[in-house]
Image (cartoon, rainbow, N blue to C red; front, side, top):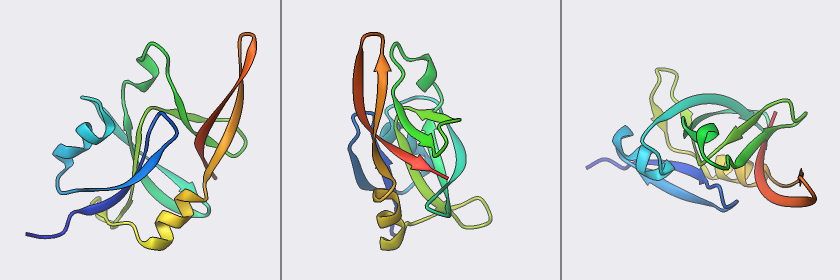
Length: 125
């Protein structure tokens, strides 16, 4: 049996972990959703493929998990990050990739009606 794809999972509670999956069929369970989509964003100068909860904005209280450096765009819900091989397939992240993503985690302050909220998010270029 071949090795699975090593990926970075960033969760709505601000925690992250290294995970491994063997098939696209496992992605929904990792993201805790039945519908997911993909996006591509740069983190500290390198492109990563992002699997994200397609229903994230429709949740009762959407949770921001990633923001663009200028705050012009936000991603919500659990995020699973990999690198693409140029043919649309996922390849495992390297130690350098994991470090790059871990270094992209920041504390974000947001105003919620009458008080400040602080959460951990990923920031991308």
